[in-house]
Length: 402
Ligand SMILES: Nc1ncnc2c1ncn2[C@@H]1O[C@H](COP(=O)(O)OP(=O)(O)O)[C@@H](O)[C@H]1O
Ligand SMILES: [Mg+2]
Image (cartoon, rainbow, N blue to C red):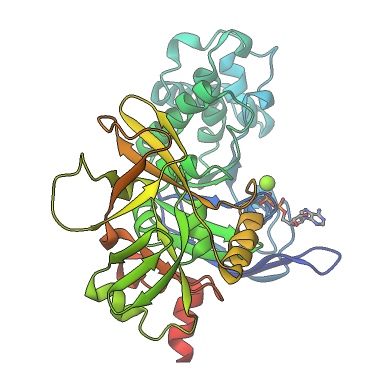
């Protein structure tokens, strides 16, 4: 096994467009690293540069203590783990796992020893003589990983392995991959556009947008301290609400009225250059004021347009107006996120016990200590706690420059 250290990696394709632009990501030995972002942000390009399927325009690709930029894929000793379509249907599970060893001309005894060790780890002992077609999706995934294991690869690389599966199978396979990665303790880089996969699988997650690293952090850090509007809008489902906000001391005026924020947040936005900021509040940081019976936070009244009651919780939809500066920034954001149009309605998650109904003028409680404030001009999160945000490259650069 080995660490993978990407240092200032650049990839320019023929037309000179930087598909990957000065990206630095350090994957520790044994770490499960996720590369996530919308389609076209450069995830596959980056992964292919790690394996050696794509030339590196600039920067250093380090695997262990070797610089591998100029090494052929087979000299890098990494295993790309493909989905079931890469298994040979006419070969038994045993021979499928043995395949790379046969290719390398290993002796029968070596093949047998390695296949049986892998099969034991993967709980495939009783399936060795079966054909892939007779296995469940999870078992096939394990066979594919078995093939990577027998090669004693330094790291596993996955490129959207679950994207063609239905939701239920995807959930099962996700659990399977997480369990095996933990058991094997093998360095893993996993590409996905799905924030749920990123959050559930990753030790750390690298969020990319148009070839640029936005933030590199643990799932919890990304969720609680997103570096900018893009990360805030990308991580979390249903997504964070973005509202126009005017700040005056600790009073924040939202479309629904005034709320109070903690002194600490107020200080961080003191020097903001815009009059109107963008407040980011996650749906679960609201509650029906009638259900919430603790002090702290703020309440406001708003007209509820629609309610979806799910039993354990309910989503209430509350439309709002936004000034042009905020609207255009949010429209831009939606485009970056591959979104479905401008969100000028707020989604709030209420307790299942709430009786708020469609058309009500409801009293809503909000936990303003969890609210973030963003600069609409730069998208930067002004209230971020940088100590708990992992790495936010742009912020760190600014800190150096200043
Ligand atoms: N072979 C190629 N030639 C030219 N441009 C490419 C090539 N492969 C990818 N790109 C471009 O590079 C960018 C990143 O692509 P890719 O790494 O496939 O993104 P992702 O995997 O995140 O969807 C895209 O703009 C894409 O059009
Ligand atoms: Mg891709």
